[in-house]
Length: 198
Ligand SMILES: Nc1ncnc2c1ncn2[C@@H]1O[C@H](COP(=O)(O)OP(=O)(O)O)[C@@H](O)[C@H]1O
Ligand SMILES: O=C(O)c1ccc[n+]([C@@H]2O[C@H](COP(=O)([O-])O)[C@@H](O)[C@H]2O)c1
Image 1: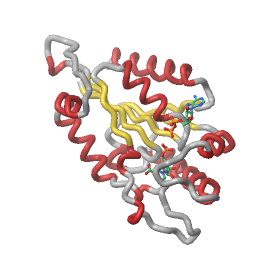
Image 2 (image 1 turned 135 degrees about the vertical axis):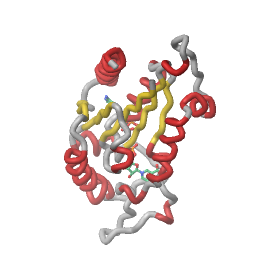
Image 3 (image 1 turned 90 degrees about the vertical axis):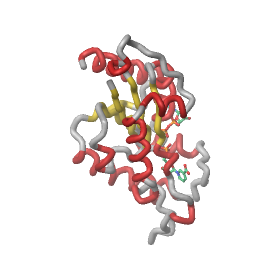
């Protein structure tokens, strides 16, 4: 059985933290990070506001991302091996084995061909103040220029969040202010239940 789980959420909500723990505890589990599909800086448009528009879907090579997911779907064992993930047979029949793919990122529910691919969707939110606080202590490959959070990142988040709520109706929303352990336990338990019932 192949199972694709979306770990979406606002920037600095805790997506990578949650994904990394799930990756260690779920069986035959691989990951695709949306951040790996950012286009090079010289291809990112500069908006009328003077900021490079990183927080829009056009800043990402979404076609390549979807193709990577399709590569996993075609052959999860080969995908796992080529990404250094040890695959262990869980049943006598390899066709019945469970293979899990985590798709992690801040805009994973705003691109239709990808939004349709998930078996289960999670979304982590945190309030503005906490998001701004966490973001200010993070350094990206291209560091944030002054004013980017209020001028571009947060307004784009609000816009995409509205679009996403209209696109998908089966998202499990997670409170990113809870402890890392609490969030992990909630999601792990939920995934286990879903796997047992499928
Ligand atoms: N539940 C949590 N409570 C407090 N801090 C958290 C929590 N989850 C993540 N963090 C911290 O927030 C920052 C961003 O986390 P990260 O997982 O990289 O976010 P994202 O991948 O969503 O951008 C890191 O410093 C991380 O340690
Ligand atoms: O990873 C990069 O190359 C990169 C370059 C510039 C900006 N980013 C920021 O990465 C953010 C999304 O990643 P994350 O992990 O914070 O959800 C998004 O808010 C962008 O502004 C990321």
